[in-house]
Image (cartoon, rainbow, N blue to C red):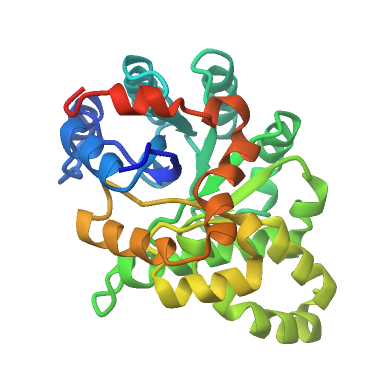
Length: 317
């Protein structure tokens, strides 16, 4: 097997400290996770480095201090994982939104003390979506830091409906709403130094692009050229993107705006393997930037995990 080279930008790790923290705060369940199984998945799919994100929904806490304390400890736990396994893991830090002051304080902490690679944002806080004025001070600071921001969905405002489990459709719509909010509000133009990565291939955005182009101009004044520029402004990860969706995503965004992602450990090993195999069928000219080069360009030297380090890391750490 060739040396691991992929950089996984959509990767979760519910390490023991985070699982305990969730139980302390009344979580009914936690995702199963172990370092051994994680390293096995990384080895199986040629992943040299995984940038860990654990999004925290804005409605989880009603108290700002509790939200801030939980988020800080969760990010510190991932930073410890990264420090214990040099070159193997990075951090896209969660922020305690919608508590703006705490989120701004935490942003300084994760960049200046934890050396985060970027942040993960849920597209909404209550009924407020990205592009809403609630997010403006945070986006301004992220822009100043030339941040990478993974836009990761959660259950829609108002909660799920029994007929359709959130993971099957609502998550994709949540990301799409966030992307449309950024487009309509002009945030993409106001904050040109933020690199927004849309999870799960952009949700429904690539599929709905033509509909948005036609109706967006007629009803909301979104010029077609502006929409097309936005589609090429976003990055998109391949987490849970199968073969047919990958074809559409390539047509809309091009390989230079797509990043490799797995959604492990939120996604089981089988769909991780299926989607990785779909990516493996692409010609090398398209596959290479998706698997590694685009992440290197986004994250810089911190993303360039030495393949030799990855090879020498024993399974089980």
